[in-house]
Length: 242
Length: 254
Image (tube, chains in turn yellow, brown):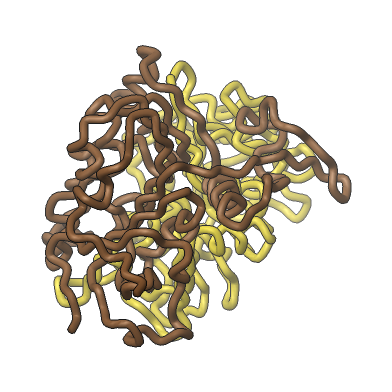
């Protein structure tokens, strides 16, 4: 069956975030980058014992703060959202916080990117033609976290998932999973393996949005499992540009 | 008698001269930015400063949104947020010739921050470095090491020109110690010995920079009597600190 791209729904930024949280396991220490990754924290259960790490030096904070009485301006995430403390939370200085990262004590990091290559190289700190860049903690995270997941909108901008980076590389060979607006792609030994697709998409459709050769997962491609009736998780067909 | 407390922010920074290298504490919009010390330095109308700061890309105006919380309500009770002067304020005042920083650009296709705009014109030099490596360069300065080898940045623009050695088969780059002339930092409480505590996420780079510089100057929310701080809870030991000054809106605990 042939359908055109603009007749299909795709995941919204929030939809991508929710799909990423499905990969989080109890007990894991996870750092969320700025942008779509930050949205993941809104979809974690309050009692989930996933320790979120904010690189300026807060580990295991609670849910987002609501209202003036709960907001303590000294307790925010690295993305500047006020949060509440929770039992077991620890604060530390920047050096200790990055020791945790560089020492390999983070189970996962979720990053945004300008570009990712099929080899798992990531570019997210320097725009072409810019006189300056901003690397922040992304390089430490990308080099040293045990698993690097990238949230990537393939439909909204071209050339985001490529064979070779054309932008300045943040870190080589580090990304193992892309959660995109059309599905989940694992990067395995230099190959792009499609694990899940948004309902209505097939491998041929997906192939049209990237130059990288896509391979089906050996055990088949699953449908991405998100509630179809939660509108905020989806982009309407007209919003998805291929 | 040891007493590191000075009367005003102006007095605290009075001997900083043009050409100095200044480490500036804090992270992004969180408390922990030594806002009033930054303002005091700016008021001295210096030139050719080298600043070391986690964030140097966003100017004063860009920090104003963080006076509102995620629900759009104004964040109250934080004096320094009422009028926040970030490190890049010194860039906006054209007092900086070089910035060693992790955030130098807004990374936005349509907007340019004060630092990148000046870098584009060749007026300011930028040394971009990741946060973990920035921390360790400052820590090395504080603890008397010449530098550290880190795997982070090897094979990228940030590792370019740096000495490379392999440990367990993994390339590491040499990041040399930073020993600024001054460190200006923020803390929660201080006693007259200069012992410091911090509050929640405001710790950031402040304890890392304390003692890395020849002179460390700290602004605090509270100055407390000697013996008030539990020795088990002091984060920065007094010998790393040279001058203590009260932040505007701060209080002296008798």
